[in-house]
Image 1 (cartoon, rainbow, N blue to C red):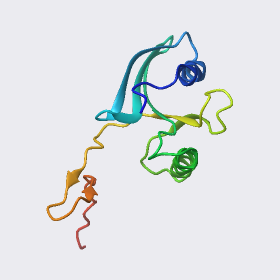
Image 2 (image 1 turned 180 degrees about the vertical axis):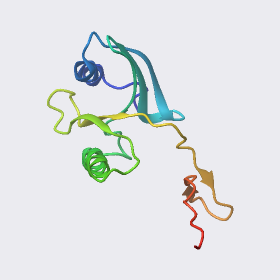
Image 3 (image 1 turned 90 degrees about the vertical axis):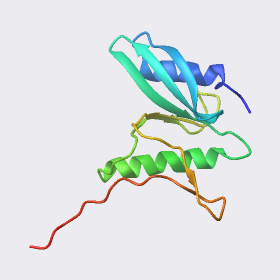
Length: 132
């Protein structure tokens, strides 16, 4: 598995951000596995983003496209979720199917359940209503 995204894909990211953008940090979001967290400096400041591309055998191009569609739907309905900055789902410019998304605070680390290898992510607290 590639430790860094392809150069052509990073060039696509720079074109998306514009404003003399340069990537000053690239690191994986999940230990040593993609997707990648990027810190991009540009004329308007700094952008922290997540770059997703197919990473066989686990993630294929259709999964990247499904993720993009889910983020568009979440935004349309005002749900709390990362926002899609841009997508090149055909890979015409990025060289592979790719999405660039906003980075949201939190963790993607999972906790192992005691009696299985299933993974659960921490859930945000639910609002509590009190009876009137």
